[in-house]
Length: 115
Length: 113
Image (cartoon, rainbow over all chains, first blue to last red; front, side):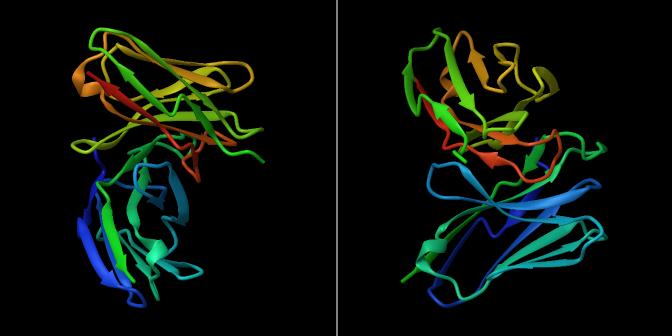
């Protein structure tokens, strides 16, 4: 079952613009992660934010987490054509400790960055 | 270090047949998880193995099974294939059995005709 929903489902922007994707989830979590997937390939881990963190940065990526609203956002600044991919949020299993490798993924946002 | 490898990368099978997919985790990683990805259902957790023990299983029928060997390599098997089993099957490994960062392989694209 899917933990949450991502919004928007698809996003098209010009190179240099910022892209914001949102993720909502349903249960309490230990952490939330964002992954990128290039067309039909494996997922690449982007960033992890723990439940006691509110914001995290990694290069051009900025992730926020609001546990009271059960939501997270991923901001990609100064986007490039190479950022074209699908982006997924993933949370750990409901009610579990962090001692499990099971991730529950959102439906993903497809980002197209036009050169 | 070499990344997660999955074999084969592409596979075409006929309904009713069975299939075995293989995953070699990153050296030193003891946890292997499997996911099924379809356009309709998205990414769904199949099962997770750690030190040859299945720790978690997703909501899939018994036709889906897996195992992990002492060298951490893992296989998953699907018996009596159905058209709906057509999907990208992804394997992920991590050093520990935690929900932290996982490293994904390129996937096996299974087509059932």
